[in-house]
Length: 216
Image (cartoon, rainbow, N blue to C red):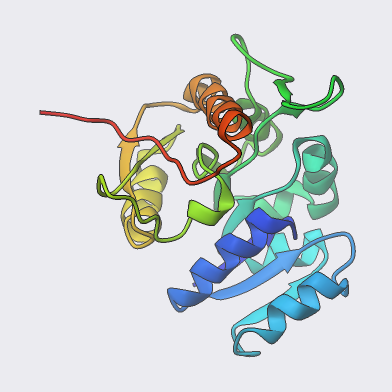
């Protein structure tokens, strides 16, 4: 499968590594496709499997698109990528609407009555947006290894088939159990959970944690 990842930061490159491991072709999109960190990333992989490009190139390339941009750059990235290039595709939204204007740790720029996930879905009305990967740090996104077993990735989105695909064909293969919490408005809950993860990181100075739903 062809995977397009918008965002060349740590999150985008980490997820790209995971998709390459699963045998997919991956293109990372950014404002500068020739930047050194992308050249170094491509150098680690089979050149037939990886590439870089503009946001528009990448959204067009991907049969599935991952949105892994900073929230402040998300709207611009989608605009540069052109909404038609996302049409009828699954879009995995990894963004969190973090506000760093008052220093660290950050706050949420959206909440309670709206969310980044809902905003992305409004911007891409012809796409099936699935919120996923936003509640954990990038080092644990692929093959998380914890003594208590597989951690839980909560996801949400309006299309049942898209969520099933993300859960079974991506998250499960990356080592996660998946809990579907419903429509994309569930992002109003998942984005504060991300902030909880971040606050614990700042209190402990350690990012080796994830959430798990215990059931019986």
